[in-house]
Amino acid sequence: MSGEPVDVDSGAVWPADAEDVTEAIVANWFVREGGRVEEGDTIAEIQIEKVSVDVPAPATGEVVEVLVGENEEFERGDALARIRPS
Amino acid sequence: MAESEAAQEATGRELTMSRAMVEAIASEMEADEEVFVMGEDVADYGGIFDSTQGLLEQFGRDRIMDVPISETGFIGAAVGAAQAGMRPIAELMFVDFFGVTMDQIYNQMAKNTYMSGGSVSVPMVLMTAVGGTYNDAAQHSQTLYGTFAHLPGMKVVVPSNAYDAKGLMHRAIRADDPVVYMFHKRLMGLGWMPAPEGPKTPVPEDDYEIEFGEAAVKREGEDVTVVTLGLHVHRALEAAEDLADDVDVEVIDLRTLVPLDTEAVLDSVRKTGKLVVVDEDYRSFGVTGEIVARVAEEALDDLAAVERVAIPDVPIPYARPLEREVQPGVEDISRAVWAVHE
View 1: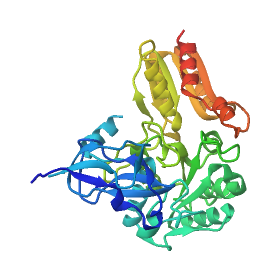
View 2: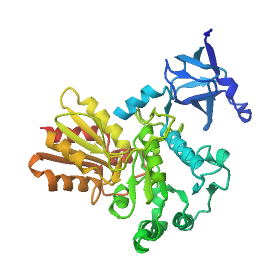
View 3: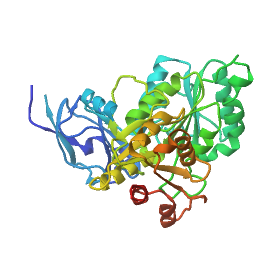
């Protein structure tokens, strides 16, 4: 089964105690474009005001696109990558 | 490198060095209830360089223990626990703090097997953060590789990437003798201290060991041998890449200092005849001198030229431009390679 790509939503992992923060950076990717992931695998680590947050894969499938590279900034709610479920 | 490439095929995921270390520790703790961790800020904080991140949640406070700020006290406790049959992992937060606890490390941990006539073993891991490049000044930036490798009775391990970090940690925890596991802060993959390209690698989910005393040829070359370890493996590889059109550089990652893979170094020098040793420790009485001495003893006729690149014999400065000046950089390595090549 394969469907439309799913966004890895940065807003979904935003900590409750960082509600007033709007920007963060990607510290690490643990998978490259083309890599396979299982739903729930930690695929990236983001830093919100020096606090590290692990980002789980929202679906099982292939990482078709990484949208924010390591050490790049993004805004809360931006998609970090796209996963094609399969 | 071949091992890492094999790992790449086996798994799509890559890990930072800190996560690879934690994965090995967690796996050993699941397999053997005698394995535990003690150190400053290893529990709630997860290690100030993430070396124990997440272990408290998984194993609880009986097995992941924050300790008071007494290195003598808790490293001594680890030595005792090891002699009593447990397998402690004690973290010395910065290797620079070894001074206050050197009796426990060197006279107890390293010697008790000998002093007891073999009636006790000391199967513990002393893991510790090393290295500079982030302006933390003279008391928090040293590697002290040579200091620990000089003193007999303990293995000394220095991983340069995630794949090696996991395999060496498994090996260290299973070893029946004390192991000093020195991890470079700049290689850990911390958000606030970005690592260079290289230390984050594919890492198999299954357990595996890397034997002590086996250096890794990270890049093959015919003209010049560069021997190094830790962070400077990546700087040497960058220098080799920069020079690739003119000089064919071989880069050797020692991976462990005790035991030392002298044969790997000799094999390479017999081929190239030119040796550059790069070390993030002080120049005098250290790793660079030891490597050069071993080559001189065993392969003098093959040796046409030698250069050492290391920290000059001064306390490491705080100021950014001054620290950059004393830290062996990519250009320093390139210059040394040119010097022996010409």
